[in-house]
Amino acid sequence: MIIKVLGSGCANCQKLEQVAKQVVADLVLDAQVVKVTDMGEIMGYGVMSTPALVVDEQLRLAGRVPTYGEVVTILTRDQ
Image (cartoon, rainbow, N blue to C red; front, side):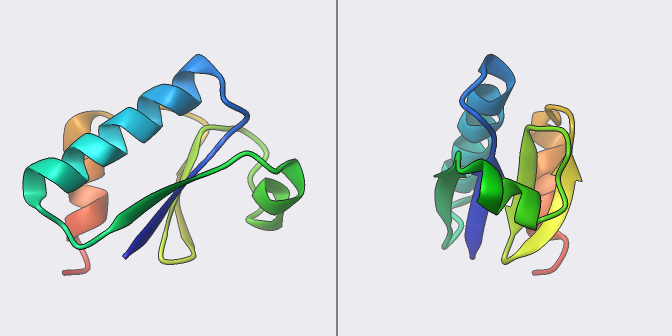
């Protein structure tokens, strides 16, 4: 699983990256968390507001920092 955190590096983007990494570690998921800061690539996902979370090339959330539980749900719903 490839998890992309889209954002410019703002505090909210950093928080989403931390939460995603924590969920991956806690659930021992076979996943890689990648930070994407290139605005062209971010806009390629149709994202107008960051932070955003992309899982296996599917946009799952944009414009806010989800809770830990929401990230668990996003990352485990297709497994």
